Image 1: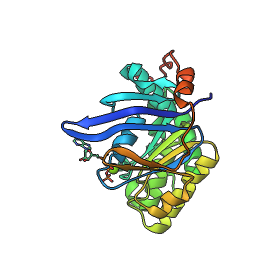
Image 2 (image 1 turned 90 degrees about the vertical axis):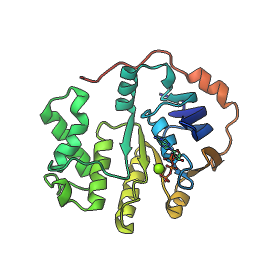
Image 3 (image 1 turned 120 degrees about the horizontal axis):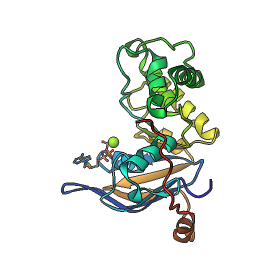
Length: 248
Ligand SMILES: Nc1ncnc2c1ncn2[C@@H]1O[C@H](COP(=O)(O)OP(=O)(O)OP(=O)(O)O)[C@@H](O)[C@H]1O
Ligand SMILES: [Mg+2]
């Protein structure tokens, strides 16, 4: 597959009378790693939620993996999301009283795969984040950094090409934060496109690209402007909806 993995063109989002995002343009190529930064309330989470197809824009066009998201129904959209995007949030959202391996395995609940297969995949994912020795620990028995790594294991379980993280180190001490960032970098080196919202200037500066939001607008983007991008986007647009693979 070629063409950008994410393309926002003139995307706006209003919540009532709050313009959370104003005519934002953003093009993310496959395999990029970038930081989204900006003051509190500048629209970072809004942008991430829209890119992650968790929320629909009020106006403008969003393409994910070549698909025009606005043209997809809810079912097609959740199939595209399940296949393409992994999420890591600041709050880990881990189920209580459930061993790490099943927290991760439940990420494949709607894949139609049998439980044994889901658990094997979860085991591999937990090893990948360095938690092979914590498979049976419950949420409250894991440190904050470990919980965030479980969340990452769950996000990368189906090998999504696109990983989005909203303040993944926001609740962690600097040591755990470093481990989590190293993990995200490794995934990027393995070919995953990684988008990270961060308040941490050092983290942002250490990434290959920085997109700065202010008052819902893209104020600065360290990526060079791309010539002829509109024509290229049109030529890479897909018209056939993705196959639904969810069991439910
Ligand atoms: N569901 C909502 N309903 C109403 N207003 C909202 C909603 N979600 C976000 N907003 C508003 O939209 C603006 C952008 O919010 P957003 O959460 O995207 O900011 P942010 O850049 O992620 O901030 P932070 O760094 O504090 O997480 C804010 O002014 C916020 O109050
Ligand atoms: Mg936010």
